[in-house]
Amino acid sequence: MGADYTFVDALARDFPAPDLPAAAPAQVGDLALALGRDRPLDLADPAIGTAVKTARSSWVRRVTVGSFDYFVKTYIYRTTWERLRGALRNTGPHNPGRAAREAAALAWLRQHGFSVPPVIGVVEQRRHGLLAVAILVTGAWPGESLDQLLPRLPRADCERLAAAVGEFVAALHGAGFRDGNLDLRNLLAARVGDRFALTKIDSPRFRIVRPGNTDDRRARADWARLLPQLAAFGLDAIARAAAAACSATPAPRRVVR
Image (cartoon, rainbow, N blue to C red; front, side):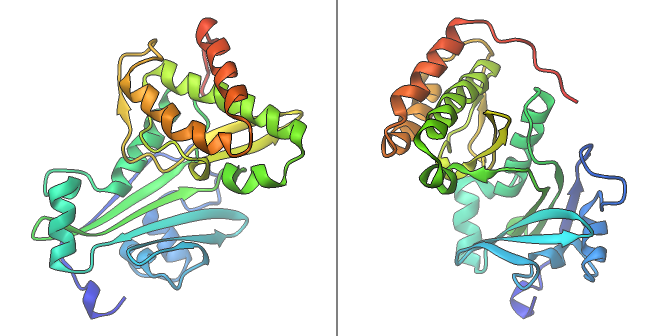
């Protein structure tokens, strides 16, 4: 990765990944070796895999091992100033980085019965306690982000998907999950028969509250962020009505498989 990335104190954390086939790498170290890299930290190399998203200080790459796809999301804090600024916000010596918080959100959702991408692991490298590199590795989830999907769907499917979004957000809120980052680009949908299944990714700001209540300040903030994005497609009222119907009816218990 070059001299700028010669930091100290690399830390790799692996998560159980029950959805992975037996032949797939189950930990970040295994994945690095399968890709011909020596260390989990080498997964931060932007040259690996296929580009999904690229910004100055973060990028997402899709890599394939055998028949299984992984997403490798990297955050880079290149300079001392960037590391200090991150520490002042939320990445100080005793705080988890963004990648770790995203992984924690996915782990919580899985534990509470939601279908989410399997988390393979988190890699962090710190210098003098300040976060320098953070990597989140997940398995693929068979869906597409709503900001890409909605413009292509026929109107009837858009309305079905909007209703599914309302039901999904109501389920999140009813379980006690407050996302703080509820955007169409972070909601994935997959068609299941004539309906849509959904999942949520990229939730570093999530908060957990007492389950049952769906109308508090953070829940309203989630809706305030999402509804204008749905309104651009004329779907906000449908999603809100579906959520209201779910909130008025006790949801069946979800079972993790």
